[in-house]
Length: 488
Ligand SMILES: *[C@@H]1O[C@H](CO)[C@@H](O)[C@H](O)[C@H]1NC(C)=O
Ligand SMILES: *[C@@H]1O[C@H](CO)[C@@H](O)[C@H](O)[C@H]1NC(C)=O
Ligand SMILES: *[C@@H]1O[C@H](CO)[C@@H](O)[C@H](O)[C@H]1NC(C)=O
Ligand SMILES: *[C@@H]1O[C@H](CO)[C@@H](O)[C@H](O)[C@H]1NC(C)=O
Ligand SMILES: *[C@@H]1O[C@H](CO)[C@@H](O)[C@H](O)[C@H]1NC(C)=O
Ligand SMILES: *[C@@H]1O[C@H](CO)[C@@H](O)[C@H](O)[C@H]1NC(C)=O
Image 1 (cartoon, rainbow, N blue to C red):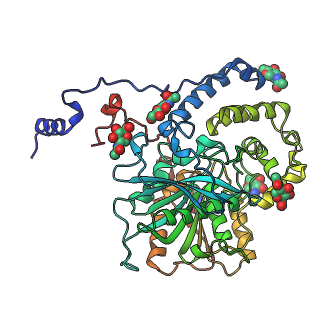
Image 2 (image 1 turned 90 degrees about the horizontal axis):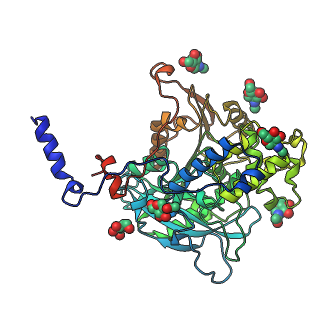
Image 3 (image 1 turned 45 degrees about the vertical axis):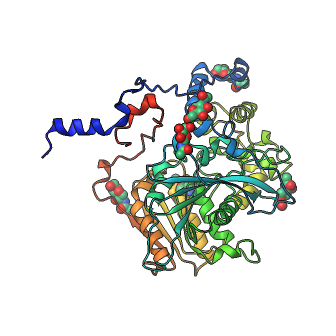
């Protein structure tokens, strides 16, 4: 048996960083490595209180500190190669086969690649986009098709990070969802192919025009996902399997559902090369009703990109002058969710009372929303009853309407009693991992047709930690290495 002393000595001896040239340990503050401050004119234009302005500064410095290699503005990976000929969607533009992950916080013994590729916006214009692939140390093996030496693929479609270049998961130290999605999937043996939806990561096209992130357009982002996979197969023909499952959360739950619809769309053979490898889709806490939930967020977020879809849209029909000024500030500072909270959920009047009477609400919902259409199954939809952003009954209504339109479809709706928006992913991890495994194994569905099921917690609900309160913290610089005793 080890005595405490022997064990400690063994551990210390095994840690090379405590040898001769050990760096000075430095306290890591919440100031991180960015020093952004709003200007006086920005504060005045958005009529911000001094508290709100301070809060925004801290939130932006935090967000910027989460950018690996300084984000798209500093990372040469995001520089577009010159355009040769007329761009075709799904074209591979650039492969970074080995992404040096030293400024990411991915789990040890996972490996990262990134690609640039082409996709289309809602109107069919070909635009560049970015994606990452997170590789497992050992690909998961299945009884069925055990001859394959390639890694089984899962397309991961992420939930809302933001709306601008710096909000691409491929540039976030934790790939934005960390252990909630991509880390878990890669550690389970899957190659995780994950698009930054158009407008995120790459924010400008070849001619310098801005690429708006067409927020909540589930099938449009679904195209981004499928083209990213097509380009990834071209980039990694020897290591990436053609067989794939799609899983997404929140905005990305709408997108994964959108993928299932795109693959089923009549008369559309854009993805006929991919269909044969398709095994099914999971949509967790999905957005299927764009204007439900936190409307103070939704109207600025959709309103700022709506002219890219409806050129006549006038944002003053949705937002007050103050709301417009704050949306402008959000764009200037490339703010994400935390900044939006300060700008739009402060209690100040930023929404016009009768925004919902405008034609655009209904028209956009029809274009954007997943559900109520034919889809290529099987589809597993999961939602928690305590979801803070998307009420469970909204998803229940979409599921029911979808089952009426597609009575023969395989759609299981799993309702989880007591779980919140993102934590529903944690509560159901075993279920979705098993579901993915079953599809690769070619097992029959446990439940066919349109079915509803439910999940209760094992212990009384009140004993569980309901919400997340931590994140993977970058400690990769030598002066912070004392923070990762489990890193070596
Ligand atoms: C700006 O904020 C101040 C203080 O909260 C408030 O009194 C004023 O009405 C606001 N102005 C506008 C245009 O919203
Ligand atoms: C923050 O650190 C990253 C390295 O992880 C670096 O590339 C980036 O330039 C730094 N940002 C600032 C604003 O110092
Ligand atoms: C990754 O980048 C770090 C920091 O620039 C460097 O020290 C390291 O050698 C690189 N690793 C590889 C395998 O290139
Ligand atoms: C995009 O398509 C919509 C619907 O077909 C059309 O109304 C709109 O004018 C187009 N928008 C742009 C910017 O071309
Ligand atoms: C969901 O429940 C809320 C609160 O009970 C209700 O206001 C809303 O109309 C319901 N939505 C649907 C789609 O049933
Ligand atoms: C959900 O959980 C709560 C709290 O544990 C319990 O009271 C309730 O009966 C459960 N709901 C259903 C539908 O089982």
